Image (cartoon, rainbow, N blue to C red; front, side):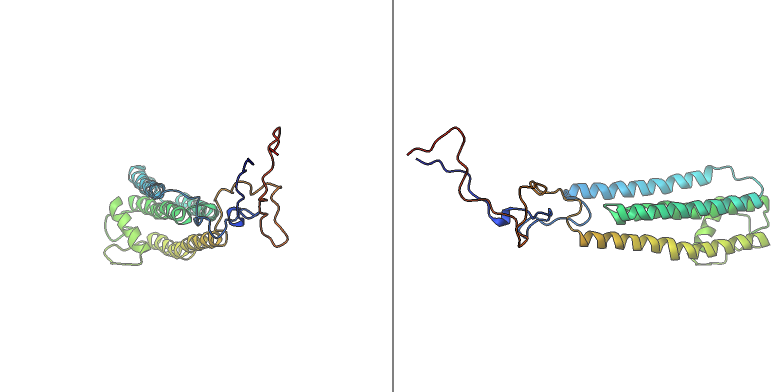
Length: 246
């Protein structure tokens, strides 16, 4: 009795030589390797937790820092240097968003750091100015009042209940308004463009991040002239050391 070997596999069972799956293969995900829905929820929850923690730590730092020094050229230089540093961080984070498996979450985490830090830098400068010159604004301000004033300027609401009175306060408020336009027009737009490019790249390479199937890099399975993978011969190889019965 002739021993039957393993049945040959069809062409559809073989992956392409470049590692891309066939039409009947499971669809690949866009931004990451195939994971469970629980893993996705954990990633989102982890990102939200980190973003909220970052904002909370910045607020605690704002209320606890000793800002009772006098306002002068050193304060303005420190503010300008901090803004340049934020710009460098944003430029570095844009590249990180482009390489991230979760670009939208990465961009949200970046904005949760840069935007509060940007606003709190100006709030700290206003606190120093208000402490050194109580007449710089239309009323005496606390740190919470100044934080409220910074947010209203950023949102271009302008309720008019708190206004800069002194020349230095007006110059500093003007600088913040110009910086606000740059943040909205450049930083936020750069993050959106980075997310869109990352998504486009994922659509063009849907198998990115998916492990290559077995045998994809095997030199013995070279594609044919028409680009299709070779089909295993139907005749099984006889076992060594055994002879077929006559």
